[in-house]
Length: 244
Image 1 (tube, rainbow, N blue to C red):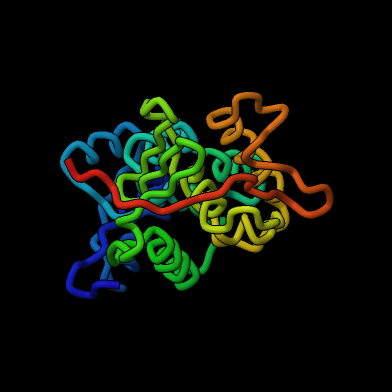
Image 2: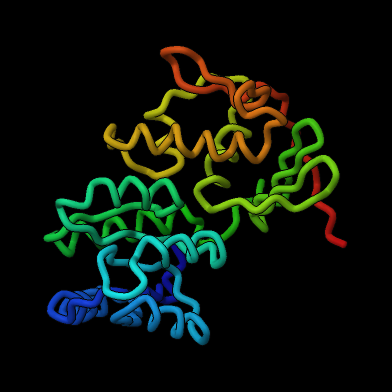
């Protein structure tokens, strides 16, 4: 990670009793911290600021954290860590399904949160682009651009794809025709070993199938391996991207 560039975190939580001391702690750890007490305030801050990561409380008055999370991962492509209460297991699952990168359950140890932040940023390539990222993935006319995180179909039409969907498709493209079990996929996509979220993997696969399969009920690309997980049933090549 590039120490010369301070990491900016947007902390979104309506509870000042948690938000303010946490912001102070993170500032002491070298982060630049922006605060927002609501989703509306967070959206306003995003008009002028570009954080590297968002810490987002789920339960807030007005627009809730899940709605804002969907906007952040689909429109802004920002890494998101959810701040959740113990009783919000279903909301955590939904959050991961729509593309959140991780979650921390309240009350949490601030040092653990810092470790999660750094782990998420490493997975998001905060420190720079890997050399191989200048090559696009191509399979049966489809193209996945790892630099711009864009997916185009064989006719050249841009297909909207969330951050989590991009990561899962890239994992499949990196391991074509290999069986990937749910634990391995979960670790590559979310960076967690939490078996509770096996269902999140299945739902991400279903969403991807609806976007790239001609018939999502009879998939050609993302094939289910009974008792084993999933296999990407296409050959994948890498090619230089058009810079025009």
